[in-house]
Length: 272
Image (cartoon, rainbow, N blue to C red):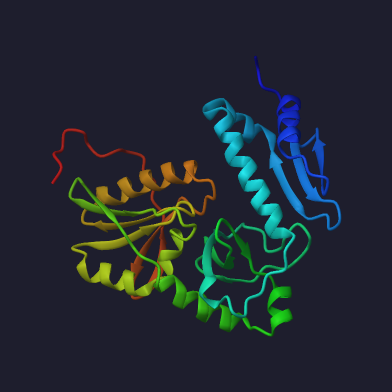
C-alpha cells in the first residue's frame, strides 16, 4: 500500500504524543511540525523525505526520527549555560546558505570561513548539541572571541583517525567518526600542516557533509577529478550537506577548486 503524507502524518502523531506538545500539518508545504505549547519552539519535518527513508528502511527510520525529534525538543526546552561547560563547546561547519537565525528569530553566532562555508558554534549536550546564539553570549558576558578561542582549542583535542585509499597514483584519506564534528577537523591547523608536509603533491580537502572529511594528496590531474566525484557523492548522501566543492590548502589558506569532472579516470590504467 502506497505511503502518503496523510498516512505518515498519522504515524508520526501516534509516535509523538505528549500533553505539552502540539502538532500541525501544512498540506501546501507537505510538512509536519511538533512544538512546545508554551514557547512555540519546535521542529518542522518535510514529509516526502520521511516517506522516502521509510520506504527504504521501514520502521527503523521512524525509530531514528522519533529519537531525534524527542532529543531536539528536550534541548529546546532547557536553559543551557556556557560557563563551566567550556570543554563542551565546538565549532561546526555549515554552508554559506545556512540560516543565521533560529525559527524563533534568535541570531546565531558565526564567522566566515570560505566563500562556501561558515563556522558556527555549538554546545555539546551528549546525544545532540545546541547552536550558540547572541542571547546566550550576552546572558553570560561572553564574547565571540572567547567562543572562537575555546572552540578552536577543543577541536584540536578531537582524535583524527583516517583510512587511506590510493587511486590512480593519488592518496585519499577519509575521516568519519560520526561525532558531529568530522568536518570541523578542517579547522585543526596542526593536522593540515602535518599532512601538507607529508604530501608528495598538492593537499586538497573536501567537507561534503558534516560527518566526513576527505584529505587528498593530489599527484596528477586525475586526482582532482576523482576527488570531485567523491565529494559530489558524499554531498548527495549527507544528512547535513556542507559543500560539493573541494579546497586546495596552500600557505595556511583554503582556496576553492572549481573542477568540472566531465570524464572519469581511464579504466584501463593500472592503480599506481
